[in-house]
Amino acid sequence: MDERTSTLLGEPQRFWAAAEGAAAPSRRPAPDLSDLAEFTARVELRSPRWQGPALLAGLAVFCAVYAAIPAGTGLLTLSPQDRRIALAVLAAAFAAAAVAVLVWDLRTRAGAYRRAHAVFLERGIVAQGYTTSLDVGHEEYRPAWVLIDSRAPDERAARLYSAFDAWIDAVLADRRLRRRVVTWLRTGSGIIPSESLFGADAAGGHLVGPMSRGHWKLLLPSAGGRWKAHSILFADPSGEPPPTIGSGD
Image 1: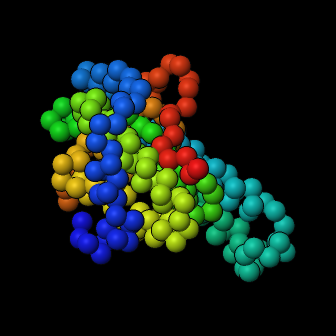
Image 2: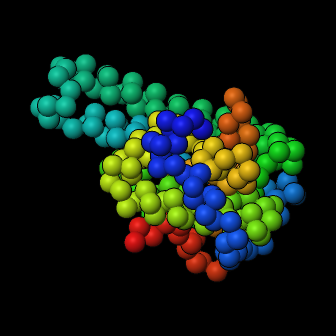
């Protein structure tokens, strides 16, 4: 990170220096995803199989129903005959798309999970997720997350947790700084390695955008040397929410 960016973000390196010797946070045993069946069952690599087809089918039904409504609603400025034809074509197109998406998913899902599992075994990271009090949403509250590598030693994990906690508290306490950090996160790659914030010796953590709630996340390398985060399902039977980093107090 260059000096200008560091200043823009509130000089996060100083929080890494201050976090040396921090007490270790509570850590849980990481889920074992070495088995392909377990990986497929728990990793949210794709949306549920029904989600895309259901949405498209719903649009098809809407078009079909709307075609039966008498003209004059003002939503389509066409003659009654042209309106019915246009809506019938749209309904057929959405229905065909729903079937196509379902068939595509049935044919490719297993292969996609096999490839992702191979990448995970080679370079993937299982990380414990901590929600933050830093809101990076546009129209609704959507917090950023901190992910800490489950393989990091306790001392490193404690220092990462403490550095992120202190930095986010400082960001929340300064309205202008908060605006700059949120803008930086929104316009960036979406997943920020901790060493980009705190320095080269601070590897093992990531700052990411909004995610679904859950204690465990999977990081997989993607094109361009970047990372992509996925939720790990059914990994915490306690039902407790993930701890929060940065209280804003």
